[in-house]
Amino acid sequence: MITSEQIEAFKSDGVLVIRNFYDLEKEIHPIQEGIYHIIATLIRRHRLDIPVPEFSPDDFDAAFLPMIRHDRRLGSTVYDAIKQLPAFIRLLSSHRNEEVFCVLRNTKLAGLCGQGHGIRIDLPFEDRYRAQWHQDYTAQLRSLDGIVFWSPLKQIDSSMGPVRFCPGSHTRGILPVTLHDAKNPERTGAYAMQIANIDNILDEYEVIAPLTMPGDLVLIDFLTLHSSGYNTSDKVRWSMQMRYFNYLEPVGLSHAWKGGITTGTRLKDIHPDIVIDP
Ligand SMILES: O=C(O)CCC(=O)C(=O)O
Image (cartoon, rainbow, N blue to C red; front, top):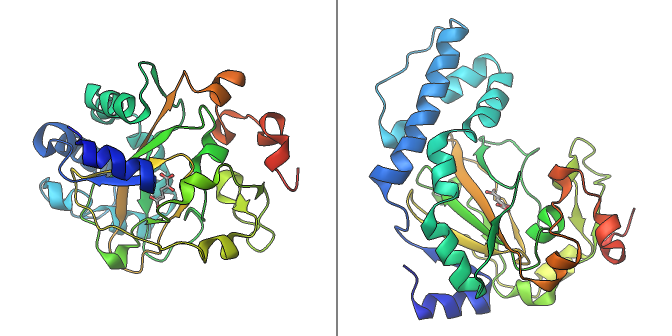
């Protein structure tokens, strides 16, 4: 499932791509098919004059862009709906995810970050929901040694804005943040959070942006600096995010595994020292 070289690479880089980790037919196609049916259902419900071709895994979202060109709000409906697909929840809590986490964190007690999972829909040229350079811990909390399980539902090429990573940056520990983005007031919550002095920090690292296929898994240490790329293609970038934490890690244990922004916890109540503009 994971080799000792991969374990070492994850430890030193704080990010690891495992190719073909998930079973396409058993694990990925059912999620793509669920999304396909939700899109088709909304098109029927709103009596939109949009053709819906037969399901195919490579093109499960063929009707999505035409649908949201008609009404952008239907994109948000799809976003909220698809994270409740049983096929996605099965993948989220699969034994293999749990086992990989336990091996990487040398723990027997893995937790799933409540409200820490979802399926991103990165639209061409849309900036508002792009993740700025961040560490997941400050947004998610739970445990300092949490791991994001990131996996695409479409083949990602460079024009689709693959996620960017700074290998090795996890060793810096938790970085101080500001909670408001004065230049982009439309960004709220985790999207507004910014790491102080980020440009100087980035200068110290190589930035990588691996290209991935459905079935591939990218593991991201909760302290690794990463950000969304910019989707300049004419395709939607669909990707799954699942997050695990370690009940036995002392910092998480000290705050009783509190969740982050999406659960209503204020970062300054847990880590007052890292919030610059409380
Ligand atoms: O997929 C993306 O663009 C960003 C994902 C991300 O930042 C995360 O999963 O923490």
